[in-house]
Each structure stands twice: as C-alpha cells, then as structure tokens.
Image (cartoon, rainbow, N blue to C red; front, side):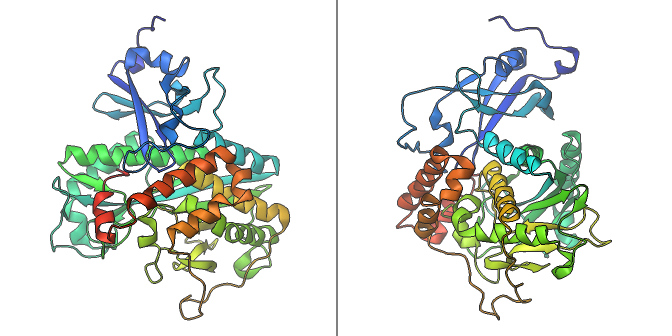
Amino acid sequence: MRSSPPSADQRGRTLVVGSLVDYAGVARAKTVPAARTDVFATSGIGASPTWVTFSADNTVVFTDDIGVAGDLRLRIDPDDLVDIGDGLAWAPADLCEQDGTASPLCPRRALRAVAAQANERGLETLMGTEIEFVVIDPDRGPSAGAEWAAYGMRSLTRHRAFLADLADALTDAGLAPEQLHAEFGHDQYEVSLPPAAPIRMADAAVLARTVIGLVAARHSLEVSFSPLPWVGAAANGAHLHLSLARDGHNIFHGGDGPHGLTPEGGAAIGGVLGGLRDLHGVYAGSVVSSQRLKAGSWSGASVGWGLENREAAVRLLAGTAGNPHGANIELKIVDATANIYLAAAALLGSALRGVVEGAPLPDELAADPQQSGAATLSQDAGEVLDELAASTFAEQLFGPMVVAGLVAVRRHEVEVFCDATAAEIAETLKMAWS
C-alpha cells in the first residue's frame, strides 16, 4: 500500500504516535513516519493481544484467552492527532480485530459502551481529572532538596521555567489546564483538566501525562506519577470527577436531599459506594496503591461519602458560586496505576447502576471518618483482587476477558514483590507509569 504525501497541516510532523493504555496503567505506543498516517488509520499497526497484559515491570502476562497466538491492530483517528512538539503528533489508539471491529480487550471500547448506556438512560455525562506528579532529577532523587513549602510560592518558583513551559505546551495541545500548582508533597505538582465527555476526558489525561514528560525532559528533569515514589513522602493521586444531568438539570444539586442532592444524585453516590469493593482493583489495584490508601492521608481511604470531605472515598462538591462547573462527585481513591478508561467506565457504570436500581444513599461520614469508626479500604492486595475476580458487576461492565486480564496483571505484581519491602517496591516502580 502506498502512502499519500502529507497535507499542508502535517508538514511539521516527523513521527505519528498512537498510544494504548494497558491493564497495568502503562501507556504503550507504536510510531510511524508521518507519511504513513493513513496506514495507521485504515489498516492499523499490528499488536499482540498481550499488549493489554504487559505488567508494570514489563513482563508479559498470559490468561486463558491471551497468549502467544493471535494479532490485533492499533488504529488511530487522524482527526484526533495533536501536535505535541519536537516533530511528534499523538493520538489515542483503539485496539481492533483484523477486520477493523473493536476488540473486546480494548479499554476505550469499554468506556464508550458505558457512556452510551448513560446517554440511552437520558443522562448527560461530564468527567474531569486531576493529575499529580513528582518532579525529580535525572538521577531520580528529590529535585528541590530541603527547599520546599507545601503549596508555597518558593516551591512554585523553584521550577518556574518548567511550569511556564508546561502551561504553554498543555494549552498548545488543546488541553486548557485549569490549575497548575505546587502541591502538598515534596517536589509535587498538580495539573487539573476541565470537564469533558468521558472518552475525551480519558484521552486528555493520557495526552497530558505525555506532554508533562516531554516538557520535563526539555528541562533535564523527569517526573513520576507513581502513587508513592518514596516511602514516607506524599502520595500522587489521579482523582476522577463525575457530573450527571437530566434534561439539563444537575442531579447532584437542586433537590431536597442532603446538601441539595436529588433522589437520583443520592442513588448515584450509593451506586458508586456499592461497587467500591468490586472495583477497588480497577481504581487502585497495583502493589503501590495500597501504600497510598491509608487513613489520614487525604487519599479517600474511608469507605463513604461526605460534603468536601477529603478523607472519604467519594467527595461531594456542592453546587455553589465557588464551583463554576456545578455540583459533582470526586472519586479520590484513583491513582495513575489505573487504566483511566476502565476506571472512568467503572465510576460511571457504578453511578448509572445506582440510578437505575435506586440505590440507597448511606449516612454521610463525619468531618473526620476516623473519629466515627468508618470502615477503610482493604490494604490486602490479594483480597482486593479476589473481589474483582469474583465480581459479576465487573464482568457486566468490561466482559470476562478484560477482568481476567486485569486480575492476572495485578496478581503478577503481588507474586513478584511478595518478599520486597515497601521501599524496594516504591523504588523499583517509581518510573513505571511515567
């Protein structure tokens, strides 16, 4: 097949990158010369089914359905291509069968399906995300030394050139960052992206992490998105926000329930909490995740919901003048080890099930859940994976092959690091999701 010459708007491109996020949460990519963009979009580029079951340590993990035989295709939509500098253009890739149909293993397919179900039920969906990361020196040690102040001006000016370039690069990539600031933890920063339709939110998050890494490299820096780059340090989250509306009316605001919740808004929260045990392994299933999800760390380790409660797994953000996007819920337990497409599908699917079934809204957690004796999420990785493996709800959301793949990848991590200390795990996987 002969490729067409690049169009005028492609002539600054040298390479076209299509990326797929695997079940370990790692973005894998294939690249073609810009002149072969049409091939990437039509025939696709070959990829083994094991592309979704690589582990964080780059081991290939097999399941009953995924092994050495078979071939799939990575395909991009040229309309999704974004120029990200240095001659690179990026687009999210779908995992397809040889005939061009979506593979049941494809994470983007799963999110599209759940979003379509919400739309069929008359619900308008917006989702947003926050991306936390730690800036480190090329030797992979702390970047700022002792000179750090949580949310401080000193911390902002420490990497002012990097952050200014990053703001420009994110904007040039069409991401319109809403916040970019120093965070609580040492060398930690956060980028907040605006709400968008579910698939566009997830694509934007993958693109943003790519751009963050590119800009950091230009400044001779590296970044870590790991939930816990160093034991004892602040943890990185990747919180997901969800807004649902019916006939233009936000279901998390304007009702007679607690803090203005409508009956459907309360049921959506009940659904998310009802699916939390089943889907914990999707949101935060890596061997590093449990090191982050601890009470008192503002990671949402307490099982429950609360208005602006940062210790609760589900935080309700009220629809006030101080919240221009309107009322929404934030799932705090998600981290960057999650496949964001599957995590978003899990959150939306849980909320949708709650609305359809009229799930009850649990009692709100007190200001400090630890004082009220609220249950916390399991710290046992094996238990978390057993819940996922046995979940009929997860199978309904993703299909059995995806669930089996997720569980296999995470169980491999547990087996590999069963005798390692927390510090050894953190050090080994510090850059796995970068």
